[in-house]
Length: 438
Image (cartoon, rainbow, N blue to C red):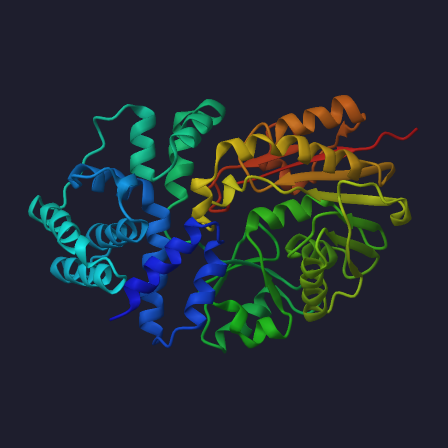
């Protein structure tokens, strides 16, 4: 594993510069000639450090004679990967973790810091690798134990209570389940499981959500079943949102922020590929992802196009149903995108204004009596309930009852908030609204 740790550090540095974790890692790994085992090791280090950074820094700070912010970024990332191995990777012997991390510091051009890194890691090992956050106050303990920023711990405790916050934070760590939606225009759930089994891929039905399966494979997109368009990867929270749209055959449906297309595809399947779905995205390239996905799945009622959701386009006409899945802070999908932990809360505070503008514009496409789903993959009342409140008060939309199968997830009958871990899904919010018949 001569270069695995330096690769992980380089990837972490690029994320710190603003790169998206999955894109950064894929780019680095594609250019590296590594065996499967080494690629898996780099991925585990990379995502593990991103996920546990706040916890790691809390521990490293105790042993460092220098403020962490004064360290060279590459040296600090080396310390993080070193401590991650010591704490979370039992497969790596302590001395190997220390020695290889020191070598990584040297390979990255910071040989002068190698003694400093070596000393810190060996001190932690001599102390039995012990750490204790129990004496911290409530918010401090949650932040350190679950590697979440202080501001997020405070926000969720205020909005959802201490118990639900701790459960959600716990669910944001660790391995991520892969769910998929069966393409019911081509096969059944049972047939898909059998087809996947022939490729030595195991999957299980999600009994409470029709058409949903959990796939026990890290790369289901590489299967023949995927290439034949028998399923698409989609979290169960997103599948429930698509079901909430309630689209019927021959209806006209608009998805204003559709890329990469998961909800669009599920809606088309629920419509039995009859009717019309206009799927939009601001960027032509992303609209192209929806088009390509629809073609793979054989869903020809989907028309993908570039369109600005903040500007009313009268050429679009009117629709029976609209889905408005707005850009959001993504706090519900931290377990899939761990770098979201390090977002500036100031950036998030500007989102509700944009979200309302998109949703208010989207409502104009509704026929009288038509319904709209407003949704996000975040857990933030400013981005969720308060935007919906504005749509009701300022745009005259009315709460609309959700389909019967979804009412068990709702407290008010028209909206759903799913916290991470509640049904093993991502965090998600959606609300159903109706345009009054004039």
